[in-house]
Image 1 (cartoon, rainbow, N blue to C red):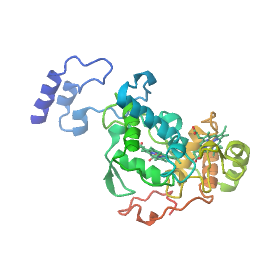
Image 2 (cartoon, rainbow, N blue to C red; image 1 turned 90 degrees about the vertical axis):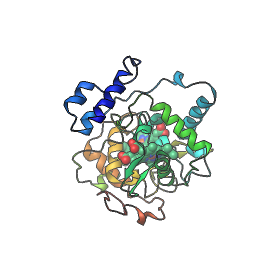
Image 3 (cartoon, rainbow, N blue to C red; image 1 turned 45 degrees about the horizontal axis):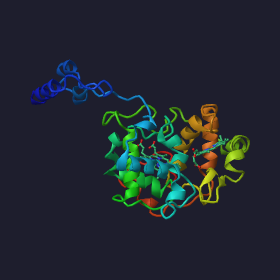
Image 4 (cartoon, rainbow, N blue to C red; image 1 turned 120 degrees about the horizontal axis):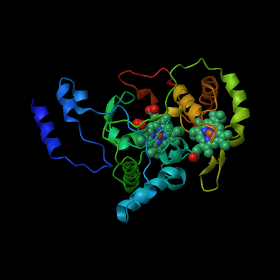
Length: 292
Ligand code: HEC
Ligand code: HEC
């Protein structure tokens, strides 16, 4: 009862919210089902993915940080050579600045952290999650969490997340894993790779580099690619990414079987190791497609 009256009081102070913000908790719905915490809060299960217009980046130092964050995630290797150990950008996988559904979008991401992860068996902050991708997907070193670069990346993600309610996942969050995973055929994946992927990613999966350390096309395996501890090194994640996003510009044209065949091929090619990987999933919960 105490909670309900607090809710009513909060709603009373909040009669005319600005039209563009999410509407407040509907009081009648909360009162009708006050036994369930989730219904009390009446959170939607997902939120539509909308990308803010670049013109909404504010002037001044905050705007400078947001723009710096955008440069860091799209030119990560070039901008952070002391921290990145491969040839990738954050946006090699989190496509178009982290704005694409089923390609690891960051819209709404600041409202999803801190969160519990079974890989570390701990509650982690957004900064720690970013450093998970720094050490694995970027095969590099963690960025100082109190440094300007990390703050800029978080400022960019916070700008992308404006208007999304805290705790509500965006539609198309993550990489949308396929429901019924087919049994993959890596030999067929190798053939498909030569037909559909090698023109950009190279016959040896090496990609095509630029002299400043960046790339025209990123590497899929070898020294310039993500390490064995990365999410993209896992079959189900890689298959989903490929199913929805590759070949670039023709996402959605491969079948589930083709995506799995391709993923089974390229995830098992040689790539950097991750020292300390044996400490992952210390309390269980290891996914079926973990590589170690
Ligand atoms: C090689 C591909 C790849 C690269 C490069 C990469 N990531 Fe990731 N990232 C992933 C995968 C895979 C996940 C896990 C998604 C899941 O759990 O379904 C992930 C998850 C995340 C998450 C959490 C997303 C969520 O919905 O919870 C954040 C934040 C993130 N990455 C930020 C970054 C940043 C910042 C960089 C660059 C420093 C980066 N990533 C580089 C593949 C990548
Ligand atoms: C037209 C060129 C092109 C083709 C064809 C293509 N890709 Fe990509 N792919 C890219 C580019 C470019 C990126 C990085 C996107 C960015 O930087 O914005 C990428 C990113 C990736 C990534 C994540 C980053 C990394 O290096 O690990 C994977 C995995 C991937 N592609 C797999 C494939 C597979 C499998 C195929 C074949 C079905 C394929 N791609 C076909 C251009 C292409």
